[in-house]
Each structure stands twice: as C-alpha cells, then as structure tokens.
Amino acid sequence: MFNKITLYLKNFDWILFVSILFLVCFGLIEIYSIALGQNEIDLLNFKKQIFFIGAGVAVLLIFAFWDYYTLRSYGVYFYLFGALLLLFVLFFGETIRGTKGWFSVLGFGLQPVEFIKFILILFLARYFSSASLNINPLKHLVITGAGTFIFIALVLLQPDFGSALILFFVWFVMVALAGFKKKYFIVIILILSILMAGGWSFLFKDYQKQRIVTFINPSQSPLKQGYNVAQAIIAVGSGGLAGRGLGFGSQSQLKFLPEAQTDFIFAVVAEELGFLGAFLVLMFFAVFFYRCLTALKNVNNDFGVFFILGSMSLIFIEMFINIGMNIGLLPIIGISLPFLSYGGSAMLSKLMIVGVVESIIIRSKINY
Image (cartoon, rainbow, N blue to C red; front, side, top):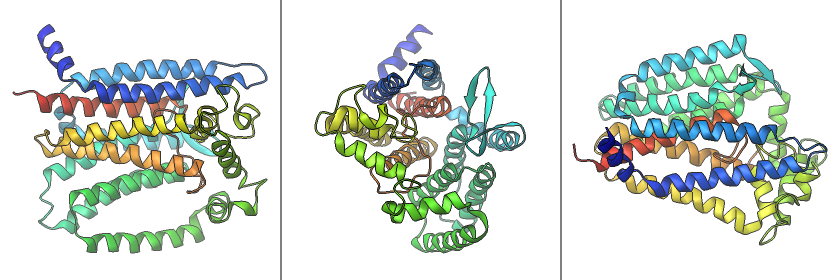
C-alpha cells in the first residue's frame, strides 16, 4: 500500500496542483479583504470558504488516488442521481435571489447544479468514448443533446439561466471536439436561434431580457441594470499596475461593487492587486490548461481524453464569461470565477474535477 501511494505521489502533477492552489489562495485573500470593508467585520464567509477548500483538497486527493476508469462504469447512475437531485431541489430547495437552487445542510448552502456540471462531463465523456461517431452521427448528436437538455430544462425551471447556458456550452464544445461535421453545427445554431427567439417571447423574464439589452448598451441605465457593469469597469481600470492594495479598493470596500466576492471577484483582484495581480491569475489558469493539454498525449483511452477536454472546456468557459462580465465585454449572467469566487459547491465540484484529471494523469504515466 505504501509503495502504491509513493508511486502515485511520484506521478502526481504537482505543477497543475500548485497552479490551482495559487488560484484558490488569490480568491481566499480577496474574500478576506472584502470582509474587512464591512461595517462590522464578519469573517463567516471567509471561514466557510476555508472549510470548503480543505474539504475540496481532501476530495481532490481521494479522486486522484482512485482509479478514474471506474467512474465510467457508474456513469448512468451518476446521471440518474443528478437528474433526481435537480428534481428534489425544485420541490425541497431554498429560494435565494429568486432562484430555487440550494439545499441547506448544517448551515451550509449546497447548489446541486455545480455538481451537475461534473456529472455532465462524465456522461458525455462516457458516451463519446464508447460510440462509433462516424456511424450514424445524427443519432449520437440527438442522444447526447437530449441527455444534456434534460439537465438544462431542470435548471431553467429554478430558474438559473447562467448555469443552463454553461451546460449547453460544455455540450457544444465537446461535440465540436468529438469531430462532428460542420453541417450539424449549422443545424444546432439554427435550432438554438429558434429557441432563443421563442425564449425571448415566452420564457425569459424581464430582468433576463434587460441584462441582454444592458450588455448591448450598458450606459443607457448606469444607475439601474448597467450599474454593476459600470462599477466593475471602474474597479478594473482604477487598479493600475500594482493596485490600490489589499483592503483599499474603493469600489469593493465602499460597496459600490455588488456581489464582490462572487460574480465580480476578478474586478476586486484587478482593483486591489492591479494589472500584475490580474496577470498572475490569468497565468495560473494558463498553467492549468497547458498541463492538461500536455497530459493528453500520454492518455491511452478515449474516456480519459474526453474527460480532460470536458474539464478544460468547463473551466475555460466559466473563466472567459466571468472575466468578460467584469470588463464589460459580456452580459452579466451570474457566473462565478472558478477557484476564486466564494461558493462551497463550486469549490468542491471544481476540485473534484481536478482530482479526476490528476487520476488520469497519474495512470497515464504508470506502466501497468
């Protein structure tokens, strides 16, 4: 047993792991800094985040040392569990900011959709690795699309438009990486356009429509819907090269910047740590993606390849959207920044994903 653990530790990708730890530390530092700006300093969220980071690292190590290929065998059960979880939260969950998407467990809020992202990657990796995609590709597109749509529909019922969009993008990117022909993407885009038009007319709520309108022209309502965008841009621009210093960001400390520890934590990093801090955050993300890409050439099975690609897709999409929100390039849809934003469920699920990626990397280096 000891020799086995030593072998795993020797083949563990420490560079990837450390890059994630640095990102986590950036987020933790800023969550602490934001807490200092409260009228009465309240470190409860900071302490909760430490707890979830500790639990997440433990989960990461468990999954890293566990044979990831067994996950493939239980993919169907994971999928069914995820669907039931989304159904239960609709009936028994708590409503926070208009979204019924949380369970309250021992004083902690758990958001099932964050774990659904992990389950969706597992489901798609399992399917694409076992299907002959050149034979009847439309069938495979429909099956994976239907499986993804069930999750999306249940998430939209909460309603959580941002998370539903992430699920769709993960499926779309993995379909692209699987090698489907261009004509299928044209069909997907046409169907999506029809659904968006229908959603605008019959499904989207007024505040969701306003977010899109505000994205097109944020200056039209700087004190209402465009307020968040305007304050985030001010925060990012005021940081300069080295930033104002921890605890000295005027936008975050004086509460001009709403949701500073979740949706707009990148703006807080840019304001308090400046261009250098923002650059380091992007650099550590780049290290993570680079290590994943370099590991792919050694993975000897399609399931491992698709899982890593799906994991990279999820983290990149969330990172891209969140930073785009913070600098006014994308609409605000409530997407947090992976590994940095406050949120226990997101932290646990992302570190779980990293743990599986580490398991794939470890076993790709070991000669059985």
